[in-house]
Length: 343
Ligand SMILES: NC(=O)N[C@@H](CC(=O)O)C(=O)O
Ligand SMILES: [Zn+2]
Ligand SMILES: [Zn+2]
Image (cartoon, rainbow, N blue to C red; front, side):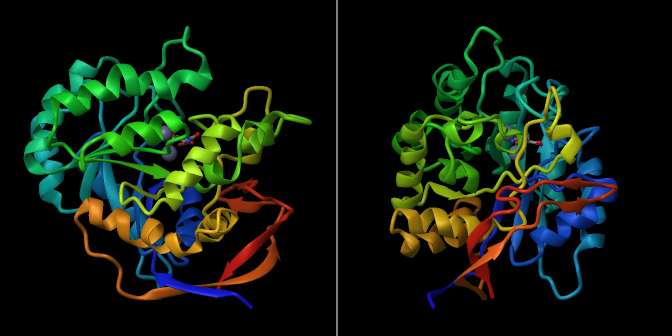
């Protein structure tokens, strides 16, 4: 039987939600992830230090005994985020980044940023204090085709931010295109990207051919196969600019299987297991550890985890759904097999 042992991984992009759902999402992330960047797009969003820190406490209260899981908090940027708020957040020691949601780009982004210039004072403060800038990289212009929104964001917005803030550490989150891979690869060492398991394993045919599959609907939307191949090549390249961020984003089953379904896919039930499949598919299992356990902490200037987990190549069947607070979530691979499991 094939086994691989790697340094304990971290998840540099997750949605844990809140309220009754928290016990379920925290249970899944706590299984073997050492740390996770917890996204702040709650209702209402975590737009200030106080809100982010009380959210931290609610998460910590749900971490099962025996797990060392540690949440890393993120501030949700708005048109009004002040440099003072950035300094306060940084001083808390628990908030390591701030996130740009272009207003209207994705789930719970209504309070996001309307015009880039509005966050320039915050970005300047972030650059000064060394706080990371995380980006949902899609334009919101309704005249731009949904499959082009990441590329246009990179061309019109991200390239300008990178030029204006050369010392700001930037993570382009959940990249989905060859354009994003190329941009990040040629940019300075201050620019990196997370890649989800589902964007490595799937393309838009999986979502749209032979019937519409709402559980594959997430933002940025799955692209064509050539982009999937570019993401796989980037993850398997060994470049330290790319690292694990699941973007596991649960929505209740009835909110996904609907006439107008929510964006977000759930992968936290089997995150490293799905990544292992993806890396194996391109004969790059030897590159999984750096992607999952080294590149993220190195970019965030945090210590790498020191203990290990072991993956065994042994197929198991994913349940049709998992409880999610008062409701349930249909995970990626529901009712089908996954090749790997964690010992
Ligand atoms: N990725 C998604 O499709 N949805 C995320 C938001 C996000 O990360 O953009 C969510 O919070 O549901
Ligand atoms: Zn996003
Ligand atoms: Zn996300």
